[in-house]
Image (tube, rainbow, N blue to C red; front, side, top):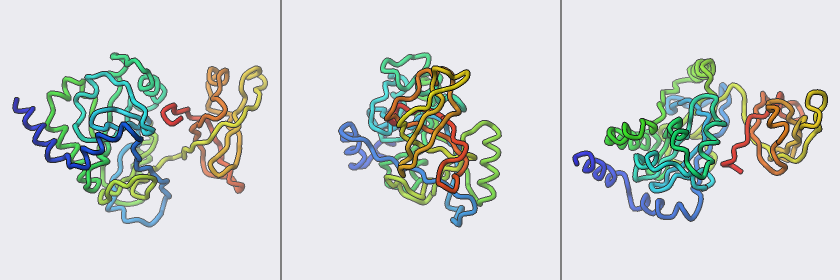
Length: 294
């Protein structure tokens, strides 16, 4: 009984009229997330204002306060025990099964009929409360306060909900050291957030992504036939970047993916290391198709 009272008091403190309105209307339209810009080494910023966290290789999800949806607003069919512990106010985070397990996460999340056992392999790693009016530090504090108020619920739900840890960025050198350390452990990269900024919809410098290699998306517009051991399979896909430039991606595919390649018109994520003098990504290799973004 005491736990129920604490949850209600906390809910009243954290939910304003605008929060309630957002919960009521989010089913009618997709929310507009804060999107990251690329970090450039040695750029001049006041890094004392920033905190960093590991960049998780999962699927970004938004809890409206009532429903779990993708960044495009499509419903995610999670088990009741998975969502009943979530707060009565909107939060967003990453559905994550661990490093290098994106394909597994995608298969679990995209299933219209939730597999109870498979969902127990996922965690919802929270990183923001979009409708909260405070800065990033205040927003994560609101999430932390809620989670601290419901320990019994968290235990019942297999501890699958947590707040992503954040650490002071301090300096460019410290950021590079953190990146190297996490990369050595198999992490995808790190995210930098300005702790003093309010939540801004769209792409903004208050959120930066840092990676050893860079990722981008491009549209599939055609194929190149395979040769040798890839005869009768796809040898490479031809893709078009947002700026209209086209190039081929021929590595990073499994044999199964070569037999049934990404369809024309789909968007693929690829990884690369800088650009040629002609503006074409160097060493481009296929990473994945994120069906939640199609």
